Image: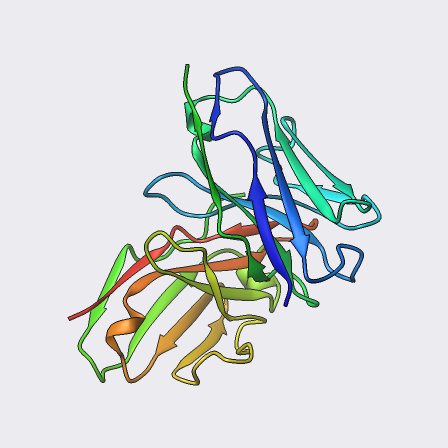
Length: 119
Length: 110
């Protein structure tokens, strides 16, 4: 079955850029699904970051839009997240997720990866 | 775009029923029938429990049900079991291709 796996540096310096990749296995990223990033600061709730379709179309959380770029690499069956100008407030577990065939729900999640912003 | 409002905690005894509320606005919960609910155990990824307000994915127990009235959605768990103890999050489509989550509710099974 389809699985998602996040990867990337676990430590990023303040003012730097956070970069993560989500590998899709057992299925194609070119299926009729949108693919999202969601984050969760330690001990806090979930926050939707943004989404991408295999065509490259994207939608972002307005509160993060100025700092976020989500891209897709169909040849590698993966999609990526870049978050610039990070601060300690960006420390969180970052999840990649698949959106269901409908609208606004996430039916498959990766295991998540903790990214800490610290010097 | 503000987070949806959920109670910080709810509790119930095994076998009882509990309801978790999720309050938004007419721009999110009240405006669309696209509310979903997630269960998250400590250290684990969220799991989809309810979508489109009241639909259950395959494999989710029918003890879980969802509803909506106005700007408030609700998740009801009947016949509480120890394994239901977890954090629960609601999520709504919020227009303009955005989504918003609730702050989360910690369910304790007494």
